[in-house]
Amino acid sequence: MARTSALRASDADREAVASKLHQAAVEGRLDADELEERVHLALRARTYGDLRRLVADLPAARPPRSVARSTFSVAVRVAVILAAAAVALAVLAVTAMWWLAWLLVWMVLSGRRYGSGRLRSNARPTSIGRVTMPNCRSHAAHFSRTSWRSWP
Image 1 (cartoon, rainbow, N blue to C red):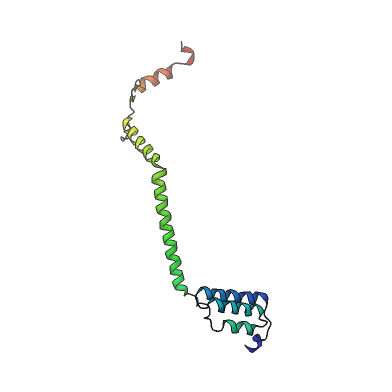
Image 2: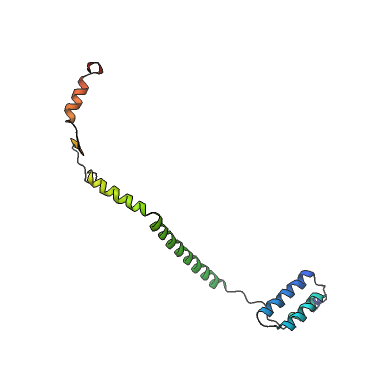
């Protein structure tokens, strides 16, 4: 410690001590007059020993939090963010895509109207909706025996 006390301090070191003094004043550890005096001395300090004497009666930096607690808090924050995103997506889906629900309802109702909602059997229908087709066998037989030249 004696070796570093005699080393000369840089401008960055002086500024770091001054900011630590300002932080202590914000926390209520120093009053305005004492802050002004110590900052003046910090900016005029030449060695690390001079700077250490100015902050010797102030508490050291807070100890770091345990890793387990910070990991748990990060996991809780991520879970809360994911839950909020899920709620936002659900609200968006309900409000912005209401037309999709109406489309599905229309498709279901129109499918029942035209018979696509029923199960189909192997027999071919002779009518689809309002249009009645001739018997498929006779229709196919007629066109298979004639050529395009026999068409009037």
